[in-house]
Length: 272
Image (tube, rainbow, N blue to C red; front, side, top):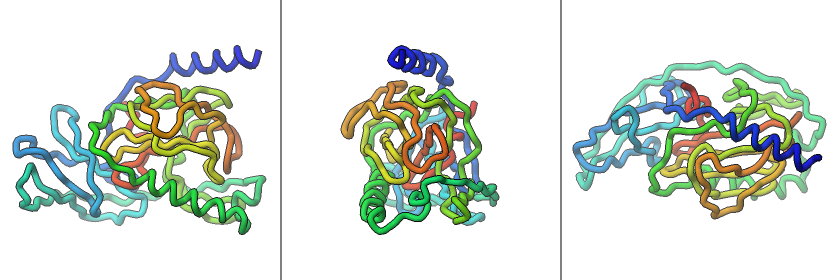
């Protein structure tokens, strides 16, 4: 019966994924800037804060897709780069508006998941290095920016919220929580490569996918993982199932999307 229930949950999820949608611009901390480039002058090579940018096509235009960190200051910013083999530096400016995110108080029963002991830190520190390396991965493959929703569930507005665990303020939430039952299937939102995977102290069972040009997706708190590092996955392929591993209060998917080394609001990739 358990096996049949798993099959039912998997099929239910696969049949109800949202249709793909284009990236939405949001010029606020945690958002995305879409900068139009000149497609007639050669291949664009642009950076923001010394990080290379994803360049793609959307609505018939060539655009640089710029991830804006949650700690970016409001005001004027710019990307810089050049076209083709010409090294003449070009700057393109954009403005960021302020945005205040709400605060969320959470009670965690496992107190070590809030205040780790020394032996936990011996595990956490190497895991943090692995995570940082994965979040900054880059290769020149063409990225599919038209994402599918990875899981059938209730999307929360949790991205950017200031987290307070058991009365202790922590970093803002870097992803979207999607509430779903344990065992519900998780699909890759686009074709990609598995660049990191495993059981991590805070994140539980997780997967990092690279979709090209620094576009990264992270899936955390999984119950099961169906892929391994180095695997090529197709758009819509089942990569794991929803769980409650790591620092959680119940089963859900933590989904993060990264651009140029920073986590942005995943909702900007799936909003019609």
